[in-house]
Amino acid sequence: MTIGIDDLPIRDELRGKSPYGAPQLDVPVRLNTNENPYPLPEPLVERIAERVREAARTLNRYPDRDAVELRTELASYLTRTTGHEVGLANVWAANGSNEVIQQLLQTFAGPGRIAMGFEPSYSMHGLISRGTGTGWISGPRRDDFRIDAVSAAQAIDRHRPDVVFITSPNNPTGTAVDADTVVTLYDAAQAAKPSLVIVDEAYVEFSHRASLLPLIEGRPNLVVSRTMSKAFGAAGLRLGYLAAHPAVVDAVQLVRLPYHLSAVTQATALAALEHTDTLLGYVEQLKAERDRLVAELRATGYEVTESDANFVQFGRFEDAHTVWQRILDHGVLVRDNGVPGWLRVTAGTPEENDAFLDAVRALKKEQSS
Ligand SMILES: Cc1ncc(COP(=O)(O)O)c(C=O)c1O
Image 1 (cartoon, helix red, strand yellow):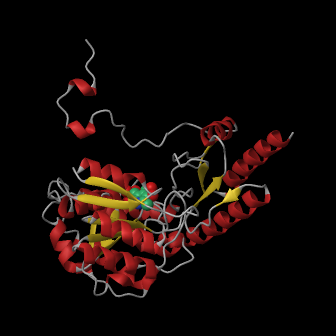
Image 2: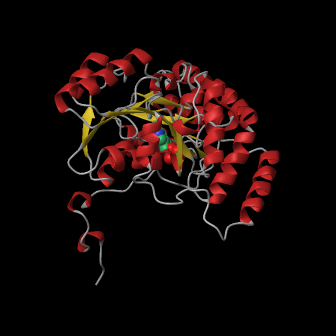
């Protein structure tokens, strides 16, 4: 007899649900998960090896539970790049920003509480909510995928969520959110009842706009989450972090697993932070490639959503999934996020982007012939 998930005594709300699953297909050009296409530079690989060798000598011991050296370096990176001074006490780190978000939901949401995001947005906000027993409300977005501050504030007022997600730049649309909108939504969230507002800035290094991080000043219920998976080109490292009032950092200690961040992870992240300037150099190249994708897609006759990230949403298609498959037939994997009429392509190397542009130009030609 074969036993499936539904034969097991799992939680009722997980029955019949699918796990997160961007396809990991073996194709020549993979532009589907918003990774940085550039491998880490060799001097950094060497430095990681050195730092990890050093850490290996004490792997018989648990790692620094509070990741003090790493959090201090992350704080100095944030201070340097945003002009807003943050210190060790403001910063917390975990295994990817997904774990940061999970710890925040475990602390501020959970059974009997609800979270709200403005969709389409990053699907893991809803999935991590479900995993932590938190209810999920999908808030409104305009047809151009921007957040309308008035209707979003009304939705907060109506549903009184315990946690509000604002993703800027937003995934999968690329849309950035301005500071006034964040302040309006924060005020609405505090008026309904004090609730936590998480600004997810996973892609902020690629943005035309400044970080929203300075808004944490005087707003103890505002958290900015960040990651080394995108701009730092270190998705395999699994290192995410947050900046907030020190009380928020104290609060997540209540749920974090002891020694959650391995000594190897801490050593690797510290090595990457030593090479910040080189890594951020790649960001400039990727921004230029993102802008080229936007211009070329428009010139080919596609609609494109304004992007502040390292990816571009393009359309419109009667049947986006069929187009996704046709692009894949050309050896290029893009992402169908389930937004009707639209697909998303990550900015890759110039050669990868050329392969993608050749594929979509060929499709346009086939359509018009
Ligand atoms: C908006 C957003 N937030 C967070 C993440 C998760 O990043 P991490 O690799 O740090 O868990 C992603 C990953 O794609 C994302 O798109």
